Each structure stands twice: as structure tokens, then as C-alpha cells.
View 1 (cartoon, rainbow, N blue to C red):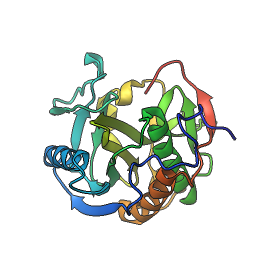
View 2: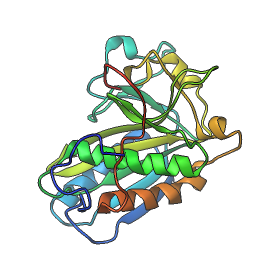
View 3: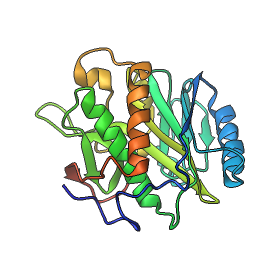
Length: 244
């Protein structure tokens, strides 16, 4: 398998500017906007080398967040509020049962945003496959992790990515649907995609899979992917003409 495109520097090189161990902070269930402000504080500190690279591992209470590319027609039809946020991508939902990880990472030069996103995806795919969804992969032209369509169901998104780079430091990150409800996704055009669905690890495996079970695996895989040890490969399941 080959990578989606050649990175700006060798694939076996760490994408991090530092080789110090990641500081993993498990925050539990935390308010979205409070965590957003915390990310900004940590990113500023990381840019000044006041702290090392950090992973925030958490869950959020039920919250809609709209990235910079969100369209008016994407917005919820259930009247619930939306947090307008400075990450890429469009609208999504966070809630209990969904694992969220925010890497606060100073990237090595030359900064390669696409390669950083693909390394996150690779860590997510490896984790999700370990939990039994062996066909999980990428849809060309769309970010995140997907499950292919079958005779009964359309393509389904299992993991989301939305990031921001400021002063060479990453913010925001990834989420993996573990055992959360999907009800709130039904009131938005999630990630601007209306020709596919959303799913969870629990639904795909037929057993209860919790964020607490998934977190250690994804942290380990992220660390390996950032170091260049977990190689980025295509893992294609389909193609799309627009980004998600």
C-alpha cells in the first residue's frame, strides 16, 4: 500500500519537532468551550517551548461545533446552539460515549499539514481495526475514517478529524464514535456529507465498546504515527468528489 501522497520529508521521520515523551492528560468529561480555551493556552505555551507536546484525552457533553467551512444548510434543525470554532472542516457533534483526543504538537519543519492529518487517520484506522472493524479505511477526498457500504447500509463515518495550526503548533484533533448516541447527527448535515451515514464501534462490532477501552490504543498509535513508525498507507474503500 502507498501513502495518499508523498510527504515533504521522509515518512520514517518524526513529524514532531521534539523527541521528548508525549504528556498525556486524561481530562474525563469536560465542557467544549472550556477545553477550547485550554487548548489555546497550551498551544501558546508550546509555541514558546514552555511545555512539551501534549495529548488531551477526553469526552464532551452534547455539543454541536461548526468549523470554518460550515454552510448554512448544514446547521441543526432541532434548535440547539452551535459553537463556532476555528478548526477546519464543517459541522459535527460531540457527546458522551465519543472519544476525543486533541494533540498539542509543535510540528517539525517543513510543516506538512496533510501528512499530519494522514498520520492521525492512520492511527485511528489501526486502532479501529484492532477493535474488530477490519474494513475501516479512507474515502478519497474525505477526511476521517470510514466503513464501506454493504448490501444493507451506505458508507458510514466512524471517526472525525478537524485541526488548526497556529505558530507551527496543532490544535483540535480527532474523535472516534465508541458507544455514543447517533440521534444528534440526524439533525445536521454532518461534516457537510449527505450521501453517507455515521456509525459507532459498538454498532459495527455488535458489542459495547467504550471510550475508556479505546483511549490507550489510540494514544499508543498516535505516538507511533507521529514518530514515523506507523506507516501511512492508502486503505481505500471508495472515492468522493468533495471533501468532508
